[in-house]
Image 1 (cartoon, one colour):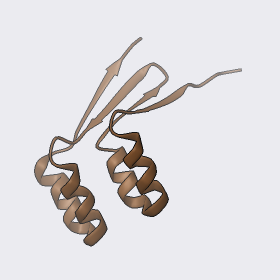
Image 2 (cartoon, one colour; image 1 turned 30 degrees about the horizontal axis):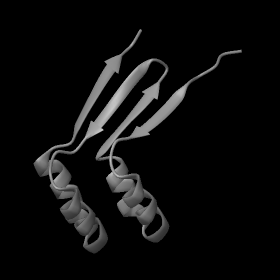
Image 3 (tube, helix red, strand yellow; image 1 turned 180 degrees about the vertical axis):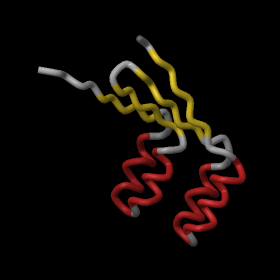
Length: 84
């Protein structure tokens, strides 16, 4: 039997993540992907957004396409580290 391993870690404020998950899930999802890591079968993927999370959350709430523009303009970095 093949066992696959999948771990998730969020480096931001867990309070805000839970708060927005309860009241407006798209903001919670946006916040989650601004500073998190996934470990899949020995490879860790780090997601990082260097600009203001407040403005990203605000534009997700008000008008989602502007939030996508912020992600494109300010940059969204993904780093992978293999531990094998």
